[in-house]
Length: 241
Image (cartoon, rainbow, N blue to C red):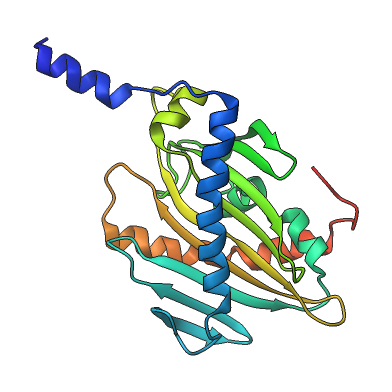
């Protein structure tokens, strides 16, 4: 093998060893940006398509919209959940429960590392039987949960850079490591133990898939709130990981 080929192979498989303190600082910084993006998405007009959002559907109180961002669009759904409190919903609004709704063929979901009480690193792995968007895919993501001053609850979830992820958990030889570019929930309290939930997702499965196909499947991901609502309704109020 030539020297150039050896260097190319090494650069494709490199990983970064990073201290827990450095990892915590990086994730805290990156997740802050994600939180602000989520809050911005939740504040734009419900049916007006403002701030670059284009409404795709609005029916029975449910809005599904998208915003063009590079070749992979960002998708958003927003629902008013009656008789579901913010605490009930936030108990099931996490990366693992969401992944189970994305695809029932989730092979493995585990917490790799807790960096703070509200900040964790999570690994997700999907198998051969999964849908094309997730088939043989892995995702190494952070999850940050925050309560804003006005009581709004935010859960931000996104992939770690591949080099950092490889240092924490080597990739399976027969899998593709995808990127969850941004995702998460904003949960706002309403009267009568109800809440408004905004869910945002932008996912790059990596590997070869037509971008139009990926964008079409991304629109389906934002519809998982209905399933999470059912989980929340059956979840005890004091449920916790």
